[in-house]
Amino acid sequence: MMDLLLQAWVAALIEWRKLRWMLGAGRPWRPGEPLRLLFAGYNGTRNTGADVRVEEMLRQVRHLLGAERCRLTVMTQNFALTRGYFAGSEQVHLPDVFPPFLNREVPRHHGVVACEGSMFKSKFANALTTMMVGALGIAAAENKLSVGYGAEAGEMDPLLRRLVARYCADSLIITRNEESRAVLRELNIPTESGTDTAWTFEPHPRAYAEPVLRAAGWDGRQPLLALCPIHPFWWPVKASALKYAARLLFGAYRESHYRTIYFHRSGREVDGAFRRYLDALAGAVRAFRARHSCFLFYVAMEQLDRRACRALAERLPAPVFASSDYTMYELVSLLRAADFLVSSRYHGIVTAMPAGVVSAGVTMDERIRNLMADRGHLHLLLDVDDPELEPKLLEVLETLRRDREEIAAGIARSVVRNLKRMARMGSYFEDAVERAYPEFPVRAGRFCWTDYLPPLSPTLRALVEQYESSAEETAPPAAIAARPASSG
Image (cartoon, rainbow, N blue to C red; front, side, top):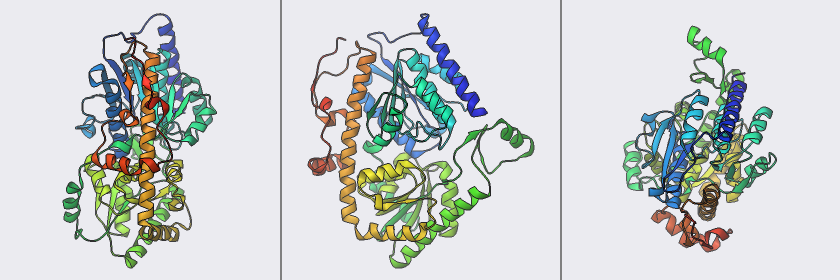
């Protein structure tokens, strides 16, 4: 009922904003003023993947539009947890009960860039997708820029599908894979093909990671094995006024409480599935280490992952590095120091790939599956609920070790392909700005595809030089054609 209430509330606000705009209320962008864009996402929870994605979106958009011609604002749920992030941008607090905030904040901007990876799906929380729809829908209702950037779409509840279909029909959604694009095409939503935006992120150098790992017990010689576990079975999060009341009055639902009115799935079935997942991970890694000496460490990519990391450490002792204690620059540096990686976190894999870390995925949904299919590494993919997870993971670990060079080369080619896709996203974004605001001074001239990316690190430049000719995709036509001068 709470999810339905939120959806109805958001729909009413979008209709109200549409009516106000038709009656002449609202303030459009005017030539000569900076373009104010609101980045709507899941930041402020120390979700490393979400923060890295947005960091690179901001860098790319500022590079495309010109820092002096735009003012970028990022939503955060906790200012303390995004302190030092998103340099050059403003931050605004996103409350748990978000419809009044959207009604107030979106009209202050000239456009919305929705930046949550799991943008359109019921797997995690209907409320999160409802918030994305609200931000995009209000912007579209006022004839402003309305873009979903690097979005993933999957299974949605029927009413949520209708909400997305109705209020995102005038937005442009740039998906991070073709599978997501197919889902949105069924809803008649305008789409373009893209990728994730974390590919251009540059963490602290290895010189940061090595002393930290040595202090945790690494001898400096052993191969490094990193694990990024999660709790795959307590999703989705749902809003519940009854559970919230019981929590306040009687202390009930303590273990499943997410925050305020939101609660995870819980019960014996959830606990049993989680225990089997952890036992399988620990058993496979224990057997692998009995055969091959390596230093193991766990990485909690989001604060919520600390529970899984600590439970694994009870089964198989190893240091835990959590996003609550390390910034995204530090945590990704630690990941990139690894020789081998097994991750149930999509961005654990993505952020390690530019460093050539050979990785396998243990997935709960289509995100890692789509990534591994793109790499040509579906043989390195397992499911969190596979009853044969332990022996299969041991076999995958042996494959990572045996075929390391071949897997690393495939990863490098995939990184370059995705950089090209990210460049293509930049060209689509420039076109969307020009359509929404024909007088905005977009860049004019002839550009290479890399000109649509934020400045690349030496690591990425070296990968591009080495693997560009072997990457299957070519640069998008828009990225190499001469762009005419804007009327502004």
